[in-house]
Amino acid sequence: MEEKRFDRNSIIGFVLIFVILIFIMYQNQPDPKVVAADKAKKELVTKEAKAKELEAKTIATATVAVATTGDSIQLAQLQKNLGNFAYSATLPSAKDGLTVIENEVVKLTISNKGGFIVEAVLKKFEKFKKGSGELVELIKNNNAHLNVHLLTSDNRTLNSKDLFFEPTLQKVGADQVLSMKLKAGANEFLEYKYILKPNEYMVDFDIRSQGLNKVLNTSKPLDLEWDLKAYRNEKSIAYENRYNEIYFEHKDGKIDYAGLGQSEEENLEKPTFIAFKQHFFSSILLSKTPLESAKVTSVNLVQDDKIDTIYTKQYKANIPLAFTSGELDHKMSWYFGPTDYATLKHYDKNLEKIISLGWGVFGWINKFIFIPLFGFLSDYISYGIAIIVFTILIKIAMSPITFKSFLSQAKMKVLRPEIAELGDKFKKDPMKKQQETMKLYNKAGVNPMAGCIPALIQLPFMYASFQFFPSAFELRQKSFLWADDLSSFDEVIKLPFHIPMYGSHISLFPILAAIAIFFYMKMTSGDQQMAAPQQEGMPDMAKMMKIMIYVSPLMMLIFFNSYGAGLSLYNFISNLITIGIMIVIKRYFIDSDKIHSQIQENKLKEPKKQGKFQKKLQEVMEQAEAQKALDKKKK
Image 1 (tube, one colour):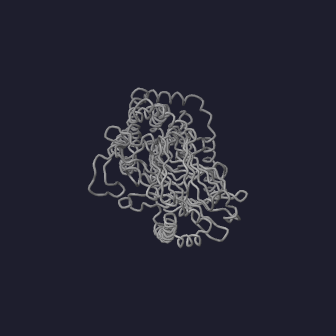
Image 2 (cartoon, rainbow, N blue to C red; image 1 turned 30 degrees about the horizontal axis):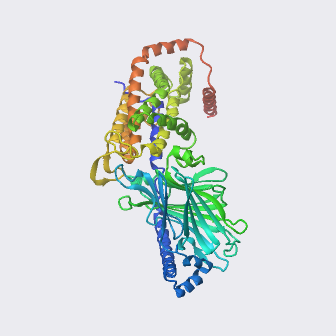
Image 3 (cartoon, rainbow, N blue to C red; image 1 turned 45 degrees about the vertical axis):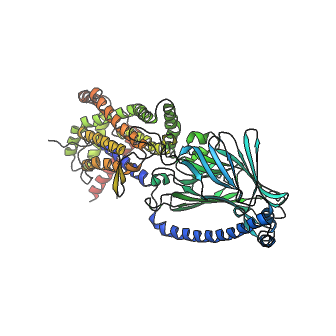
C-alpha cells in the first residue's frame, strides 16, 4: 500500500507556524548571564539608599523638633544643613501630614514630606481576582518617590523628598487644585501643583519656582528623579511581569521601550512621556513640551516566581529640569490608570502605543481589524461568547484562502502519479526531472506555490492574535465557563508539585486547543500526500511531519498552560472551525475526478504564459543543465 504523505506546501506552513510559536514563547525570556551582575548592582544601590535614608531621618527628626518646640539648637543645625530651606522647618506643615484628592476613578494621597504622591489607588479595579476586596494600588508603602536634587548657590546638595512642603487645597469649579510649596522664605519656594478633574485618570502636574534664582545654582539643570517599585496585581506574577516594561516617546514622536532583560538602561532625546508600564496598569509622566533629555532604568525583581511574589520591576527615570530666566517652569501631567487601548487613546497623546500590538502588518491587523471588531462584539455579548463569535468571523473571512489552499493540494495530489513517473524516468538526472516537472505544472495550469502562499497569508493573523489577547484589558477578570479570568490561566487542578516549563497547575483550555490541533493535523496527514516522491539527499519530510503531529500539540499544551485563557480559547475554537471548514470543502467542493478532467483539458490547451518567477527558475535550470553538459564534455 502506498504510504500517505503530507503536501510539501503544508509542511512548509506547519514548520513556519512551529518556528513562529517557539519565537513568540521565548522572545521575552531573561538572559541568565546577567543575573549575577544585576544582583551585585542591586546590593550596591540598596547600601547607598540606606545611607541616604539615615541622613534623611536625621534631618526629619530635627525638623519636627523645630516645628513643634522651636528648639533653637536644632534650628541652628538645620540652617547649617539646609541653608535657606531651613525656613520650611519653622512652618506648621513641617510634619508628616497627608492631603487627599480624589474623583470617581482614582484616589491620590500627597505627603507634606517631599510633596509627592505616596498613594495612588484605582477605585474601579481589584487585585488578583474579582471579589478579592483589594483595590489596585499603584503607589503605596513608599514604593515610589519623586525627588529634585537641589543644588544651592552655597554649594549644598539637598533632596526635595526629605524636606517638608506646605499644602494648600482649593476647588476651582469641579477641579481640585493642590499646591505643595517647599519654602526658602515667605515668597521664595519650589511648587508642585496638582490639578485633578472629574472622572479622569490624568492629573495635571506643574513644577515651578519663585524667587529661587539667588538660592539655587541656576548654571545647570536640576535633576528630577522618579522611581517606582511595581507591585504585582495579577494572579500569575511571571505572566504579568512578561509585559512590564518602560515605554517612552522621544526623538520627534518615536515610541520605544527599554527592553526586557534583567537590567535595561536607555538614554532618551527630547522625551515627551515616560511610561512605567505594567501588564494592565501604568504610571506615566508626560511633559507638555519635549524635555531636553532623560535616562531610564528597568531592573527585573522576579528571579524566582515562587519566592519573589510582591514586586515585578524596579523602574527609575532621571530627567534634567532646565531653568528659564533663573526659574523652573515645567508643565507636566501624571497618568495613573489602566493600560487599556481605548482609555489611553482618548487622551490623544500617543499613549495607546505603549500597548504592544506587534510591528508592521501584525500591528495593522490588531489596530484596524481585531480591536474594532472585538470591541464591537463585546459591547453586545459576554466576553467569552465574543471571543467565539470573533474567531468564527475571522475564520469565515479567511475561508476563501483556505479553499484555495485545499484546491491546490487536491490538484497536486492528482498530478502525483505523473510526477512519480518523471522521477523514475529521470532518476539519474535530477536537473532534467525538475525541468520536466515544471513543464508539467505549466501545461496542467497548476502553481506549486499556490498551496503555500495562502498558508503564509494566514500566519500574520496567527501572530497578531498572540499580541492582541494578552494585551486586551477588556478580558481582565471576565469569566467564562470554568475560567474566572480570561486574561490569566484557567486553572482546574492545582498540582502539589512544580513541573519545569509547565507549572504547578493544569489549565483546561490549552488541553482542548492541543487536542483540536492534534486531530486537525491527524486528519490532514491522512488526506494529503507529497507532491513528489522523496528525493535523494533530501530530508524525509513525511517522517518529520509525523513527529510534528505529536510535537505541536505538546508544545501548545506546555506553553499555553500559563497563558491567558482567552488566547487558548481562541486557538481551540480556531482549530475546531478549521476542521469543520476542511470537512465541508472536501466533501462538497473538492471533486478529484473533476479536477483530473480539468487538468487533462488544460494539457491540451496552449500552455499558460509563465510568470516571472517560473520563467526565471526555468532559465536558471537550463543554464545549470548547459553548464553540466559543458563540464561533462571537457572531461
